[in-house]
Length: 172
Image (cartoon, rainbow, N blue to C red; front, side, top):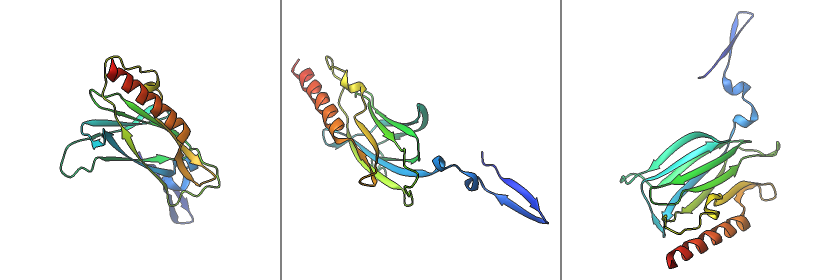
């Protein structure tokens, strides 16, 4: 619900919009775009949920319509913690963790952009799910490079453990 503050001052009405009083963490700082694949192919029927500090904020579904380009996009507010959950029936749900914590001196105009491709794995009997419960990527702001980045070492480690588990379950 939008609110407006009206002040009567010497015969003039001054109207203040919410943006005039907005706190710095009400500012969009990051546009995150993703594509979901399985074995290099885009897949349909994927549900993507955006959580802000454990509260579901938005949900979208990738469908097989001719005009759909299979991407999803969210705009994230400054100084918050987010998670993106990607799921599809018959596949293992994936999670991406994002921190939009920024130093006060960082300019967010224009907003930062981050794009990623997420590989989904089919659910199999015997699949060790220990590492599957961890986020597949941790994304946050890197002050040295002045951009949002994934923690490459963490992502390589988790992806490696997931690939080991998938290969092992295929042999069983």
